[in-house]
Amino acid sequence: MSLFVLYLLLLKAVITSFSGLTSLPVIRHDLVEQRRVLTDRQLNAAVAAGRTAPGPNGLYIVSVGYFVAGVPGACTACLAMMTPAFLIIPMLRYLGARADRPAVKSAIQCVMVAAAGLVVNSTVPLARDALTGPLAVGIALSSFLFLALTRKDTFWVVLGSATIGLLGKLL
View 1: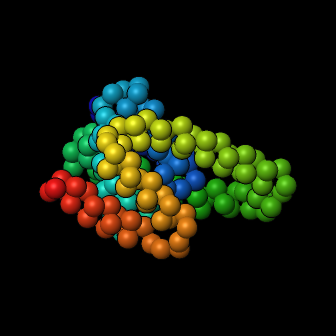
View 2: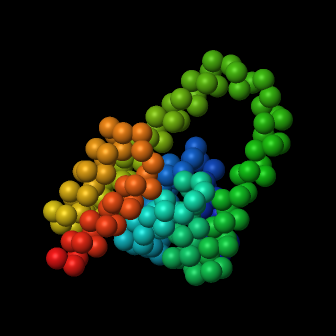
View 3: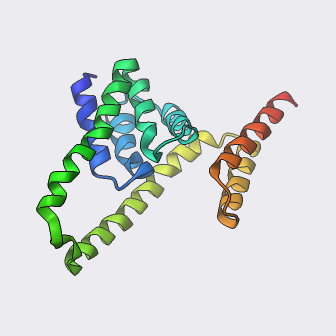
């Protein structure tokens, strides 16, 4: 895959998402299902790498670029991730006070609901690939409950999950 096509695909994913992992369905569709240059396992690894690194939630896109085309792919993905930041200033100047209109707010809310549905839709195949045994399912359920019931940082989930996973491999 050429770096220009990779840039365009990742730019499409970044521009059509609101933040973080909402670009996941677009990336999975384009790179895993359509072009088959990435596997679900690699996408899972990219998300895990992006979530453990400090910075924005969408940082996993750099790992996706790396899996597809090595270091040049990672640089291309980083550029695709930064491009919307350079485009938003002229867009905000153009939109100005239009963003406060009820029709615009309703449209944004509809897009956010649709994005949530797409994230759920793309998460199911990734979960099927990642949850390979009872230990992995237990870690996933306990992590979900921990995050849902407490206000603790995800760092503790990553640390606890890694510890339990390593202990499961050793025993």
